[in-house]
Length: 595
Image 1 (cartoon, rainbow, N blue to C red):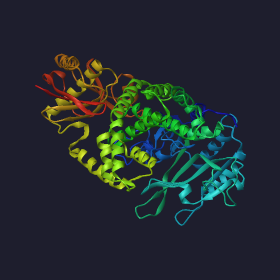
Image 2 (image 1 turned 90 degrees about the vertical axis):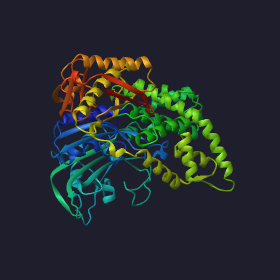
Image 3 (image 1 turned 135 degrees about the horizontal axis):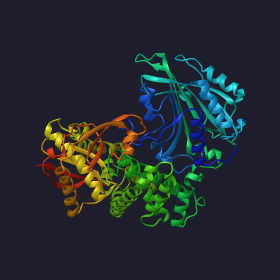
Image 4 (image 1 turned 180 degrees about the vertical axis):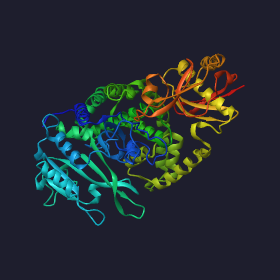
């Protein structure tokens, strides 16, 4: 087996799949679009669900990519040998094209052929679906593996909990076959198999065969259009290929941990607690950079994705304090991360200044509250007496008033031999969230309350405002939301500080110059790639080839949009900014009217 780095593995996988006729598509955003039951993109197939359900993909029926993914359910396990919050998933998909025969043959070729990964077949094991009362045993997949030369003692039939995929309800589903690397760990017993957790078998790839439809009545019926969905964890597979004891020793973390070691004066691997802290810092800041650097990047807040981001940054800062990192070390570590990924995910490098600014602001916010919060925590625990639990309301007060994520309170409590009433905390948090979301039902698509002429004029003004803000404040400015009625517009945008009066005046002046120019509002339909090449503002997704509407107002604005607009900028009237204020952390709000 070759000593293949993670970077090389990514290149090889995409080159292999391209040679097999797959269109290599870019990673989708880590933040799902529209309504979603998850906060982040958790797997490579997640952004492709509409196409797996039958919608035609503009790039064809064979796709492959490296997808940015974030999972935080195991955040407390981060710091061990394998758990991460951000990871990359290498995947290939067949949308009603090839099926088991080709997928299994290509998986074997990529894993074992010396031109690719060159893994010794004796080091590989494979599992397939054992069958049950709902669906038969997947003998087809087993026979295909045998045809590749796999021995019987390397082939395992496992139940549905191990080798079956579904979306959790009615819809496409089916068996899968998983591929494992056999470590030097001895068998845990006579029945040792990939279903064990003894460490002998490390999963490196999974081929899902969507061949059934689960009906509402619970019965399975064959799908007319069968799909393949595969997933290979880049970090974990690289760990195997490089012969490293943990994912943190791969090239993906080498430079990050070296920078942490340099700034802290600590030696990685010398002390268990220090090593764990260094891994947590590396993982959490890498994930924070991916969230902040995303085209849909959010800023730290107390709800939804912003809360996860805040939790990650503050947990990294706290562990940095434990090992002696200097103030604002996160910014320098982030520089290593953005430099490492600039050739893979260019949006991360493009938003480097924004990432650094948000990390600086969040560290300063946490620093200001940490000392006070620590004192409050000490007072709180001193009042407990013989009690061994911090009540939920007190834990929520530490969160709401002092910015302590519940997990930090739990960590600090555990250091004192205490527990936290997390159920009580979450009850308080749910009430807080309900209040903070009050009026959310008043939001509407595109931010327009109605489609009246007045609202359309104000909507057109938001395009000019967006362009003017970017012209005065810089290209890092991005729209974060809008709300428009017949009387006024409200526009939220990413920016880290209060605007100066002169900047407000310049923005207002630019908008009115565009209005005075009386240029027509032109609408063109084009692909997202064409819109991007022409300099249109918008979120560029992996759906290249889709038709979008681009509204152009002379040299003043070019933006992807779907809402109603005025026919000419001269129809707008005089644009007046009434107020500029904070909306949330890293997000400013402008309220304006046209007279």
